[in-house]
Length: 68
Image (cartoon, rainbow, N blue to C red; front, side):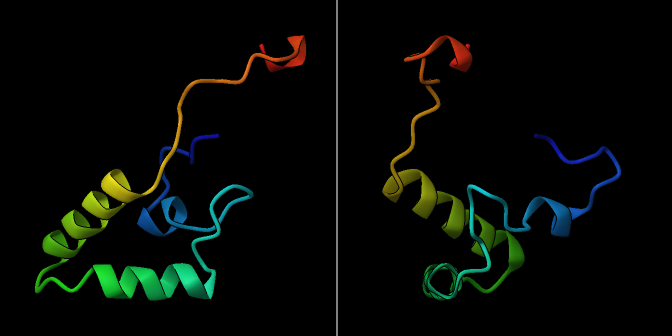
């Protein structure tokens, strides 16, 4: 589900059913990873950490007709 067009960054970064961005372990890891001097530097560090460390798969599960 996409946020509405008028959504701000805080709406896009909020916790969801799937991503618990407010969990203390997630917050602590983000602090450890994002130690750059600028907002852009921290964003790049977080992006690279997620890209290189967290396994995810965009392939949908099609094990039942309801998944289609």
